[in-house]
Structures are given as C-alpha cells and as structure tokens.
Image 1 (cartoon, rainbow, N blue to C red):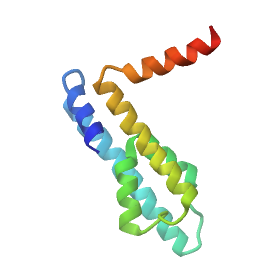
Image 2: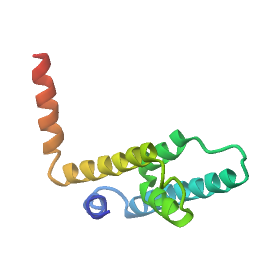
Image 3: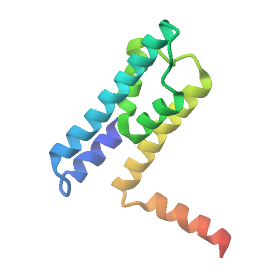
Image 4: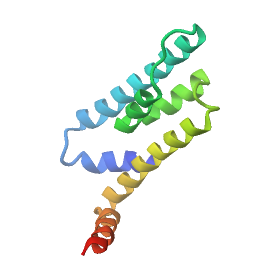
Length: 119
C-alpha cells in the first residue's frame, strides 16, 4: 500500500486532498461490504455477487477493502483463480503508482517497445 499512498500524497498538490482521501476510502468500504454481502449470501445459498463485480470493485480502487474483506470474512481465500486475478489487480495498482512517481517512464518505454513492433 506504500506506493499508491505515496502517489496519492504527490497528487495532493494538484487534486483536492478531500477527494484523494474520500474516494479510495469510499471505494474500499463499498468493496468490503460487497465481500460481506457475498459471504452472507454464500452461507444462506442465496444469489451471489458475481466474481467479476468483486474484481471490478477492487480494480476501480477498492482493493484495500477487498483485501480486508477477504481476511475479515475468510471469503474468497481458497480459490486460486480468484486470488490470482485479485493479486494481479494489486500489482497493477502498484505498477501505475510507481510509474506515476517516476514520471511515467515505464509506460513510455512499454509503449515505445510495442510501437516498434508496428513500425
């Protein structure tokens, strides 16, 4: 969580700090509650929250809430395919936070490399 937090702190010079604090917290809370809901519905054999919804919520920025929801409710911790997508989501957030902090150098290099294939 350190790199995304550092990126948010750096953004605070150009974006209102209330948005930078409220948005990730709100997304994490919503995602945490989605995990709670899915766990409860799983226990009662009711309709479930689709895995794609849980992944999308994490990808949109609710990954800290997803992590805590998995730990707190012991939910979605055994299914390997789900965990792989979840950790890939966290990896993407870490990558883009690091890339933002170093001036988008990694993305520029990747785009240049891909562009060279089509040149």
